[in-house]
Image (cartoon, rainbow, N blue to C red; front, side):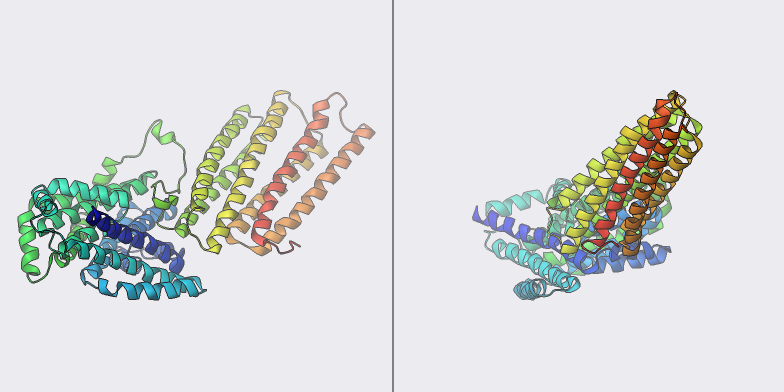
Length: 548
């Protein structure tokens, strides 16, 4: 029983190391990894080589999958382009397993010591990120060493050895179990490292390790598909990658005796852990080679497996950019920085919807269209849905270990999202109701009231655009301009209201229409309220600085 717990502890160390590694990469590179992904995909050969290079700098299969899916979603890259990059990345990712095979687990304590010094005592995020990466590698190697140590104590004729010997006769079942383990742990490295640790101690043989490597690679392909499921092009990318991995796995399992003979011939004097690393390299080099040769048929097949949605499926609305994979720690992404980039794009989507609501509502008032007013009101349901999904996404991120900058960004996004949701409610519940009543009752404003309301609308809409730019660019100049506009709009509303009352007292407003008297003031008041919520973004950008 203690032996099994020790093995579980070794797996836990590897798993923690892999996930801690992702956070370290976030500290080191932040959003730069995503930017590099967009830059290297301009040509097929730069996508291939660049994918390999990015994977060497960020040796995490889940990180690469998340980056690839994010590139499809946010940069509009095609399935063909990002698939080419991912083939190169799969080859680059094998280097982590090769490092484990070098048996440097005896240096794990030294790596942990160096990592702790950099992570705990350095102030700059990039050096803390380096320390976190080194510390992660130490945890991974320490976990492999733990598994090796306990595996050496197993009785060669014991129950565990007999169990593994029996399992070697069922490679397909082993492949499925490894696939499930890779999906559950969200790490092919942890799954393969477990097999390598047992192999180094002579507990498992090469056929079993080959099946585990095939299953772990297919599991990562399934994880990628889950990440990109919510968007059609990202779904096609995931389908194409999974088809490629399944094809290679099936071929290698069918040729299992020949694959084992090849690995034994190639590394005849090596133990099973080194042969496992070579198997992992062979699998992904084969995937990249076959994938590039059959790229066009693979993309064609993916388009037929994941066709464009039609009918009700095409009308399904939901978040465009949020990662749907239920990852550990609740982040749903490979790291907090990447997740914040996704939530930022989704908040910009909400801002676009809210702006379109106000713009279309004013057009509906001009053309007297009740249908358009009702359509605008329905759009608020979409804002509410996105608000709920993004808020839940960001709230889960608050549970993650984050830098102070990331924590501030989370709160900044939540604040702006809340203001957008409130603005959507004002448009739906107040402005839409007023304009619908104006259309139905055929209320006509006098010229000065009509011009005042239109001018107020133009100023508020302009402020919405300024707020969006200030929020995205964290532009302090625009934030101060936004605050000045708040005062100007407040002054404008008071002036127009006083002029309206003055005309009313002089008989300048038609006395037979109480709606014509009250409605312009109500519109001005609600527009002013919208502008007040818009202006709150200035405080999120400026912080404690005086807005003036």
